[in-house]
Amino acid sequence: MPDADRREDAHSIMLIDGIATRTREAAPVDLVPVQELHRRCSLGSRALRYHAGKIGISPAEWRQLSDPERGTTLVTAPDERTEYIIAMTNVMRTDQQGVGELAILVEDAWQARGLGTALAEHAATVARREGHHALSATVAASNKSMLHLLEKMDATPVETTGPVLDLRILL
Image (tube, rainbow, N blue to C red; front, top):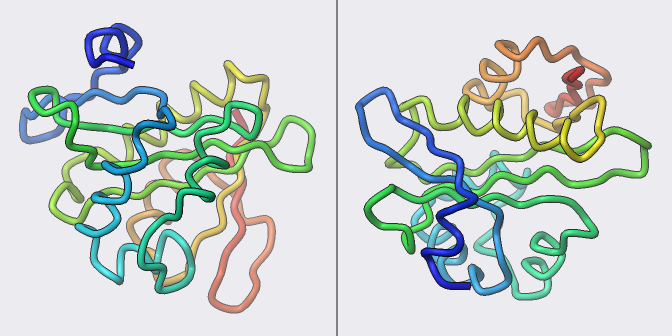
């Protein structure tokens, strides 16, 4: 899909440092830029997102993440470099009716600029639009940034399994 077509449906996010970004639904053709995003993220960031030292994302995994039947994956790029993906947000369906699963990966260089919070808030809007009444997130207890973000969204703990917390946000 040409950039001009995708930009029309994009959600604008202004970062705290004044840089404008655009978030849009991912497409199968975004695999290479998403793989590049993963390569630019530190092992620590990928481990916090995937709960493992995941190197990247395979074509098969991307097919699942970009399949609208499984949920919605969003990609974010700077407004002036729309091909350069800096974040990926997932709102995936779960086996619980009306509960979506939230996950976010933000490139290290773009963290601590308000992007994660804005993406989580936008993901909640997407989830409501898709008929979800709640979002769940499985977060490492060491992922202080994500826990702080979820706390701002009034997430409540559902279960604690060792170093991993399951939280729920009511929409």
